[in-house]
Image (cartoon, rainbow, N blue to C red):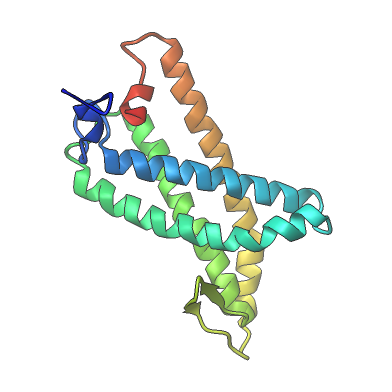
Length: 184
């Protein structure tokens, strides 16, 4: 069956053993776009913190980062709900995905710890996630300053590996191609 020129299976909400459902695919691709933004802003910030471009884009880094954090929590919950339905993967693939999820959560948590420790707080589109405070917790600031960027760059390396492995499997022929599972 086709609707609006698309296969009916394209609208399958939940995962199956053969492919990921619409909810998984939407979460995956929205986060992929968010990660591209995070990579862009982090790269601009790393290259020249005083540039006009950095001044224009850096202010949105934490907002998109917190969005990634919220979406990562939703994804983890969705993976747990869908675990028995999802396509089967080798243990190495499952380990790589686990590393991605852990980094997707730890990296923004470190930024939140820095906001808490610095006393500056964090506001997300009007929602006061962490209230500003006069009290400083230097340990949290130091921990986050040391590890947030490191975890972020490691996450990007894992994402590059994730994409590379997708194309590697695709190059081995249709029976090994995993890309159709996630693109619909």
